[in-house]
Image: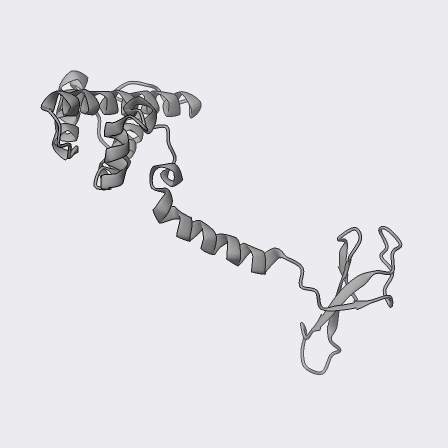
Amino acid sequence: MRIVSNSKTFRTSITVELHKHIVVQNSDAIKGSLSRNLEIGIFNYAIKEATQNCVIRKWDNPHFVEIYVNRLRSIFRNLKNKEFVSEIVSGTIRPENLTMLTHQEINPKHWEKHIEKKMKRDKLKYETKQVAATDTFTCRKCKSKECNYYQMQTRSADEPMTTFVSCINCGNRWKC
């Protein structure tokens, strides 16, 4: 873990590096103000996170520096995305507010596929499968006879199958 001995020099060098990484066709004045505002936003983010996590907000505290550097890395990584930079330059995203965005908000196209896959996985995993509906079982919770069930061999082969029952009305589940 590192500490920062001279915060002004450190923050100025960060602004210069941000200035180099912002690919803008326009003037250096725009790049300069963007890079300065990005650095201020990163600093404000580090202050906010440190406050929420009860971390001392000083440059000689390695935990505070780590919060700052981690957010800085995230911003540097996303500055390679040309669409993202064009949104910053056009004013759609303000540089000061940029650092408060989540990774899904910064690059929604990339994360859309991953979120969709996870939602499909969760749907298959947690949705009840309509197997066999029966009135053989009575729900102990709502006394309804509308139940679904399926059987599975959970123990050794010489023992009977376990029946998993779920009530259609209240969602109560049990095994027989």
